Amino acid sequence: MAQGPRDARWGRVVLGGLAAALALAPALFTPGSASAQSLIRDTEIEEILREDIDPILKAAGLEPKDVKVHIVGDKELQAFVTGGQQMFLHTGLILETESPNQLLGVVAHETGHMAGGHLARQGEMMRAGLKPMLLTMGLGLLSVLAGEPTGGAALIASSGQFGMIDVLKHSRGNEGSADQAAVGYLQRSGHSGKGLVEFFDNFRYQQVFSEARRYKYFQSHPLSADRIAALRAPVERQSNYGKVDSEEDLREHAIMKAKLDAFLNPPAQTYIKYKEKDPSFPARYARAIAYYKGSEPDHALRAIDALIREQPNNPYLHELKGQVLFENGRVRESEAPHRRSVELKPDAPLLRVNLGRTLVALDDPKRTEEAIGELNRVVAADPDMYEAWRLLAQAYDRKGDPGRARLASAEAHFSVKDLTAAKVFAMRAREKLRADTPQWRRATDIVLASDPDDRDLRDLARGG
Ligand SMILES: [Zn+2]
Image (cartoon, rainbow, N blue to C red; front, side, top):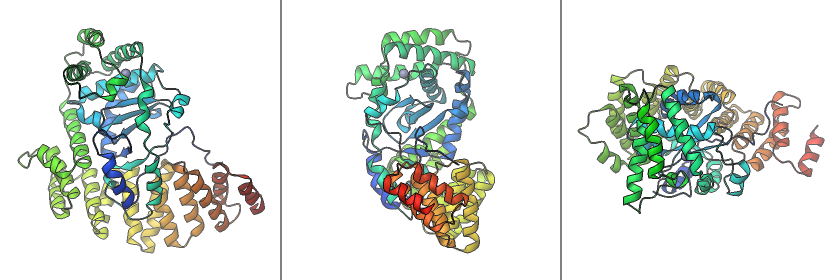
């Protein structure tokens, strides 16, 4: 069997479907809304985060590649860890941090919970309704896409689990030990704990003086003057206490925040925060994204081209350019920038999915064949990539291969644990595929792993 059911893993899907994106957007970005959240995928931001986080994980004795870091698109200031070494950082937290060192401090604290085993037990999370399935979408795909809205829409309806995250409330003892562990990790990875103290101080102050602003994070990780004092003492004794963020770290933190701000907020808000007269790279990047979001594609493209002239080898600028073109119906023109981004960063599956989407949309036999190759590379590396499977299904249909098309649809649904639909498509795939091929066996495996009932099993037996 190539793959078993992935019950222990978090389903992932890159959102497809314009209707789904529109349905999601208002709920997702209403402040304080806990009803619809999603996991955000963005290669550039993921890279920046991992570069910072991995040394902390190592200092905690964890294996970075075993720890999944998820970005939750939600304004609430929140971070938490769950079983299976999963760390969740809300965009609200990232945007509230004033420096890379502050963000790193919170990450080190959460790593302290992870390494200390202060995790909600799986059973508790299930009782609280936190099902192991979340909606994942590309940051760049928010206002996209053509095609099948059903997969995404169905998931949005069931993706309001984070409201229940209060179950993760930590005890005072766990908080203290996670704080102390954090100082050790920060010291060993060459950082000061000053940012963590600052961050807590800021919110302690706000909690005391403004009853109106209560942050979920600090409800589940209670702050007290004693706790901050107990953290401050070892931090001030650190030999790295006076260490400050490098220029590079500051730059990347600013880019990450600019990108999140611009993608997640209305353009008008971005123009206020990133003013026309601010010539910095992050400000111009944010404005370019805001023009695109504000349906001014030509303005956006001029802004992006100016950035590309300065940084011709920045894959994410080419990615953004391809996206603006694609989403404004200029599919043929989007091919070159998407190719360029993959060329510059061949190991990034999300960039390859963008190229695959364009190639499928161009709808000629040579490009369809190329898309199949690109997308198969993606799912070989990450079988949970819903959007890649969805596009593969389209590509196989174009090619006139209905068996593989149904199988790819089955995989798409299976990857987000929509087992009912996965089973239906896998059954159809079996009818179209030649018996005993690897594809046919895979379709059979999916049926078996998708809670088959007696009738399904009888059908399987009849089909051999
Ligand atoms: Zn905590």
